[in-house]
Every structure is written in structure tokens, then in C-alpha cells.
Image 1 (cartoon, one colour):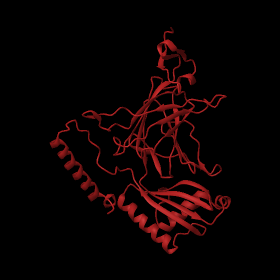
Image 2 (cartoon, helix red, strand yellow):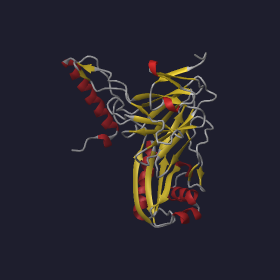
Image 3 (cartoon, one colour):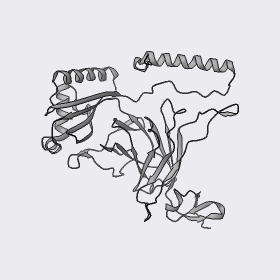
Image 4 (cartoon, helix red, strand yellow):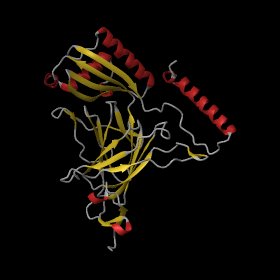
Length: 342
């Protein structure tokens, strides 16, 4: 046995694809000699993080496919239920996951969720080898909603837009939190290193999709995204830095963009101004507008945090119902849009 080694589970979706690992079938484990084994921990920060499932989640390292088409595909499930109601499971569990990963710098992992990913998630990579380990994570989302990376309470800007590539610049793994969004495919990419904690969250923004009678090449030949941002900002009387492009693609020409502002009142004013501009034809984007959709996104939770109760007596259940009704009433008072439709 070597003097320095790691032991990992006999997981067919992971262990055979880690260099230097040798299977010990009698012990139901693999022995490895690599400095870049790590544990990736992530969890939902949404209000429904105890009663909405995302599992299973597949963690796949790029470049591990073999000639038979099989590659690393580590299937991760949720923790067990946290409570029991007598004989039955309480169906309450944290949406928190952890996966053993082989994470040398340069590695890229796809994360595929069986259900829609949580709106807000926290990621943490744990490893003793901080100088050589790090990984890019790619998450495919079902929609083009504007999202952001947060580190130490500060938003991290995406890589600069590349007009030649017609998208955000590739993640070069220069620093923890480096990120970009790949339009049309709706993939968020970000780089994480050991000891670095990152959050993924929706942006406080007016998310807008506008379809124009314009060819894609013509759009980029006439100033591209820079000119588009200037036109939106100039028409609405807002600063150009608050307008962020999400994606640009054909059909005829579709531009997804967000107008960001952490001030809720200012965001509502910008939405009203943009709605009026679209309705009156006051928004000149350089070509006839065929279709428009807009929604407001934010990083706030939509209901009170779930609470785990160990006491299942009738009195405790009645108290729980009263507490949840009060929390729901408070949430609706703060945001009337949450009121149920009758």
C-alpha cells in the first residue's frame, strides 16, 4: 500500500475514469494516488428547498468518453428524509448534494438535473490541494432567464462579450467565479476552486425578449450588441451599464436582454417606461419589431422558509398551520402577485 493515497467508493459512474485508481473488488472500493480528488457540495437556497426535488443529478466530466460511448456519469441522489410521521416518511429533506470529483485544473463538468434546477444555489469545492485543483461547471437551464454569480456578497460580472464569436468569452479558469452564459443553449458556465463559495441566483432585472425583422449578419454589421444597448438605454433614459445582453440568435433576429437594478421602485419605473415605449413605437432598435415578451426576475424567495417540526401532536400541527398561514399572508402583503388566483 502506498504511503499517500485516497479511497473512493466502488462507483461505476466515477471510479473507473479517475487516473491512477485501482479497484479492490474484495473491499468494494478503489485506491487512488492523485492530488486532485475533491468533494463538490451544492444546495438549493430556494424557499421550497425541503419539499421540491431536483434529483437525480448527473455529474459528468468532459473528455472521459470511451470507444463504447460510456464515460464518467456520476448519479447523485438526495439525502434521506429528515423526519418520520409515525411509521411513514415525512417527505421532508434538504435539497443538498455532494459528489466526489476528480478536479485537476482544466477539468470541465456538465451537471444535468432531472427536474428544473433551483433558482438560487450555493456551491463549494472542498480539497486539500488548492493550487492544482479547480473545475468548470456547466448547468443547462430550461429558459433564458438572467442569472448571476455571487462571491463574498458581490456580483461577479460575466466575461466580456465577443462580437466575433457572437457570445460571451470562454471561461479560461483564471479565477474563482469567472463565468459566462451561452445563449440559445441556455448554459451557465462558471469556474470554482477549493475553499471558494459561490452562489447562483436570478438577477434583479426586467427580462426582455424582442424579435426584429433583421438578419443576424446585418445586426452585427451595424454595431451589434453595443449599438443595441445604446439604443435601449437612449430610448428609456437609463444608463447603458444596466442593460445586459443574454443571447442573440436567428429567427428572424431575437435578442434576449435584461435591464438590471437592485432598486425595486426604479425597476418598476423602467418596466413601465419600456412597456409604454413598445406600445407607442418609441423604442427605436434599428429594425421593425415583430414580437416582445418581458418579465421581472429577482433573487428574493417567494414564500416563507420551510420549518421542520419534531412534535406531531394535534396541538403542534394546529400551531404549525397557524404559523404557515401567517407567513403566507405576510408574503402576499409584501408582494400581491403571490396571491392565489380565484
